[in-house]
Image (cartoon, rainbow, N blue to C red; front, side, top):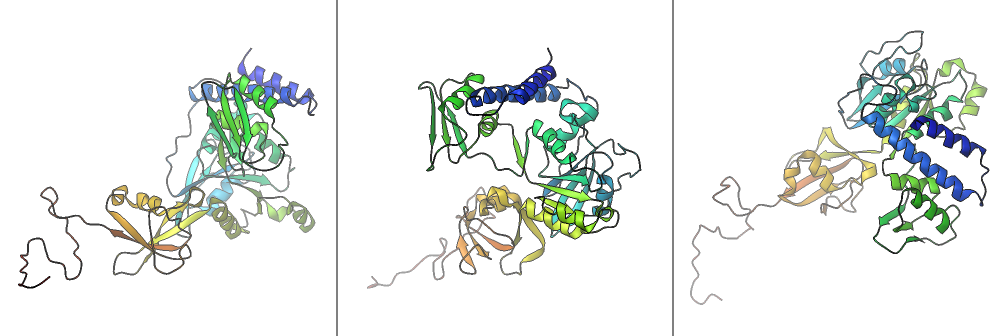
Length: 403
């Protein structure tokens, strides 16, 4: 029996099983098996086996962030790509016009955002239909996903695409589970929590069943919030990708105002018309908001700040002064003494901060370096002396009676 057949059998058994407290352990055991088989399927795809073979999408990652366009065929991805970037993407009235990945660049608020026009996916893409594995594997490398939907067609495409992406380990608009998982040599399985209240989804029995499926008999599981069994499986697997997502509702000009008000209740969505260029500025602002990029400006000593070329950092990774310096050049950390910051991240302007200080959007940073004594190995380095201090090469005369 192939891996795909095993996955289908487990999915059918999950569909037949009733969800209640008595069957929760069995359901979690099936989901753990399902996650293992899907991981084997990913490894098989990475080694070149399985369906959907052929030429891959080798696209070099450039810019400060990467945004991928994902959706069914003929929903307007190529039109949106050609409108928002200077890259031409072929547009036609038939499906599967785009057969490979086409990259483009968006310049917005000083940041360079790479946009990828991916071929359309169909139901069953995670199993290899229509080169779906290659499309979703490229989507895993993105910083953000734009799921393009057709406003005229049924909204049933949205859960289908979510299912296909989830099958490849992509979690949309979710944060990594607050779970600490540690293996140990002995002591069995221990489940504990760091918050007050009862656990609604996980208990000791369910946790043991999930770990037994992975042949783990000794481990510590610490919950920092009320998490589900699926989230524990994601932590054990360790190959999940968590990224923001915006649902782009294209062809806005083809629906009525009443239908738009109904669709307005959907979370994380942005209505546009790529052909008529409606609300493209709103989509750019939405992309900037979900990417959570932080602009930091540099200020050379004795000069005005350089507002033309900001250093772009990710707001999800705590944009510290150390990451700011590393992005400029990591050798600057050797001579780093402190930094002067102007902006909302400090109480006083300028504020003297260290490497661990967290920057905010549009902060201005000046790096202060420390200088050691001149050495024979590096004669170009100078020593900064205090006002009134004597040079090491200048003789000092002390008068009698001087204390």
